[in-house]
Length: 86
Image (cartoon, rainbow, N blue to C red; front, side, top):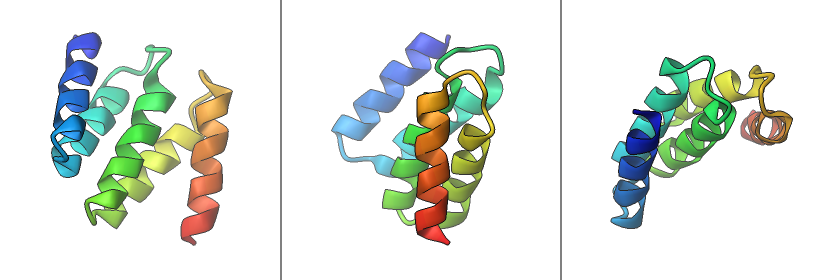
């Protein structure tokens, strides 16, 4: 189901519906702790949520991505984004 949800999120993003895309990415990352794409989904969700004006939701997604040990690249990107937003 994670593949289907990320495809749906991409469709929303391509249609410029950043809020829905961001929420779906973040939900997918939050809901699947064992998924190797978790940090990436949370990070992308955070970017899209921030773009749609949902700063608090974006910060939460970035925090969760930053603490994910499964993908160091996206965890580090999330940490940097959090520093920029402070």
